[in-house]
Structures are given as structure tokens and as C-alpha cells.
Image (cartoon, rainbow, N blue to C red; front, side, top):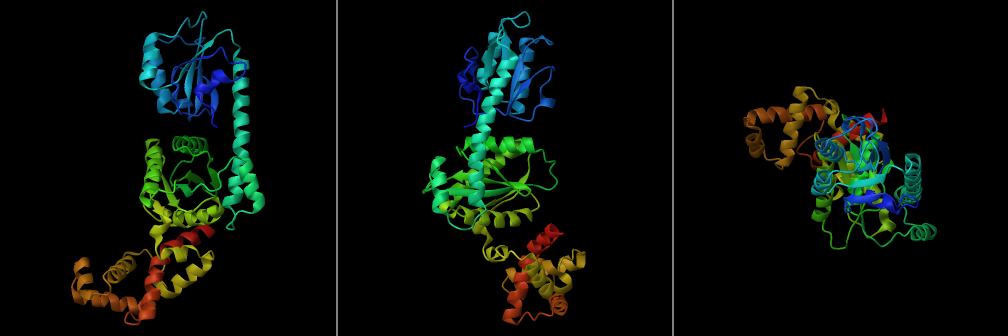
Length: 393
């Protein structure tokens, strides 16, 4: 379990520290931070337990409230104020009232309690928490990395870790957008915060340029309810100005199929990456694309698309893009020339000219059912093939 501000007085040796506000705060502590500057925001990344000694800075009541606002903005876990000293005699009542109104944690530490002892005990508690988390993380990593059902030995190990192996699980693969300035500490802290909020005890699991996330579900959770959970993650991260793409698995019966769920999330994430903006793609949304996504041989996809599309493949020149857009409209309108011309707002003769040109470039006859199907599939697969080709290079 993550360490929170309310847990600090429960640590052996820290009983003299009092929790004054924020007893229901869910912010997890990542590390202690001694505030020596008037402003906090430039130095925090999230999860800090901030200590204020008053030795170098004397703050007014208004400045304490400003400190609380900055700590909230940066997702700090709480503020510990050292009192009963020549620097800070007591905490103003107005500061505590303000903290309560914000549901923010304020703790009071007697100045006589040595800081070196406090930070050592807190760090030890954090390390123990991390060790426990790593054991769980290793188990989850092994399960997600194997498409085979859990062996009896793995099931026994999971039970020893206190995992309900019959619990229905949702799996998602989150990948920060490529233009994001990746700060791993910020990302990991915010992901853990959200997982804690939705009562998932499973840590984010790093995978290539992103993380697998595990969400416990109930048998009554519909696909739309699952989407709603993940939309909550989108709102949470967007508040922190973090943009990402997300692939979601289909709902499965439990941990025995978790490796399969991870594959589904991975395949959905590939299509989410093809979107221009932050996208959440559910595995069941892929339709026939699920077949293409399951093909692990990237070169096979590339060769198929290149063979069927000819010079259209990977060609973003305006004339070629126009022809591919025309072809998509033609397929979307089930080959109706009248409906296609109407949607494109062009004359039938112009449409016929484009289609003839497409047939010449691709060596495909649109009145031949098999060739038409292969061309349509190649057009659908092209973005995925290009993405995999770029990743491989």
C-alpha cells in the first residue's frame, strides 16, 4: 500500500508528529522534500512530503495559504510544519482552516524531533513499500509477458501475493505522445495516483515507450463502463497537461488470460498511435483490423501493402493522397459511383477518371471481387504497416 500523510504518525518513532488536516487525502508520498525557497512549484514533480522549518524564511498566514495552493497544483502529498521553536511558534488557525477547505494534509512536527531521524524513518518506510511493490511488479510482468495460461506454480505465487486470480481484469497500454517531453517521475507518479484513485493495487509496468496498466473489473462492468474508467484516466492526465494514446483490451474472465489481454491492448495501442490527437482505442473497435494487428511479421504487412497499392503506398504527395481519399470514399459507399461523386462533390466523369487512374497504378480491377477486397484491405492496413516499418528502422 502507498504511504500517505495520515500514515506518518503511525511509523514507529514518529508518534509525536500530529496530522491536523487532510485525514482523507489520497495523495501518495513519493519522497520527503525540505522547502528552503519561498516558492515550491519550480522544485516539485508530485508526491513530495514538504517540510517547512522556518529557519531561513518567515511566512505570513497568506504566504502559507499560497504554499498550500502551490503544493496542490504540483500534487504534493502534504506539508509538515515544525513548531514550538524560535522560528515558528504555532500554525495559524487560518492556515489550518484553509487546508481543511482544500482537503489538504497538514502535519505538525515538534522542532525537538531531529529531522535526520524523521527523514530516515520515512525513507525506510518508502523503501519497504517499494520492495513490496517490486515483488508484485515482477509477478505481473511475468504474467503479461506470456500468452499462455498461468501455470500451477505461477498461480501459487499469485495467491501468496494476495492476488484474487479469479478477479476480472482490464488491461491497457499507455504510450505518451511522441512530442511529449517525457519526465518519467511525473508520469509514473500521476499514473500511480490514478490507479490508487480507482483502487487498483497493481503498479504501472514499463513496456517499451509506455506502461501497461491493470484495472480490476466486476462481472457487471459493460464495455461502456470500462471506457468510462479509462476516460477518467484521460481527464486526470490532461489536467496535468500530459498527452497520450491508449489501447484497451477486451474484458476477460481473469488472470489466467491476462497475457492474451496484454496482446490485445498492445494491438489496440498501435492503432491509437495512428490518431492525430490523444486517442483511446478499444480492442473490439478494431473489427477486421484485429486480424492485421495480430500479424507479428511487420515485413509481411509492408510487402502486402506495397504489392497491392503500388506507388500509392506511403506516398503523401497531394495527388496521391487525393486518389487514396477517393478510393476510401468509393469503398465506404459500397462502390456506388453516384454516392461517391456526391460525397466528394465532383462530377461522375472526374470520378471515373480517378478510378481508372487508380486501377492503372495498382494493377487492380475494381470489378474483380478478390482484387477489390485485397486493395481495400491494403488501404486499411497501410497506416499500420508504415508505423511498424518506421519503428523497425
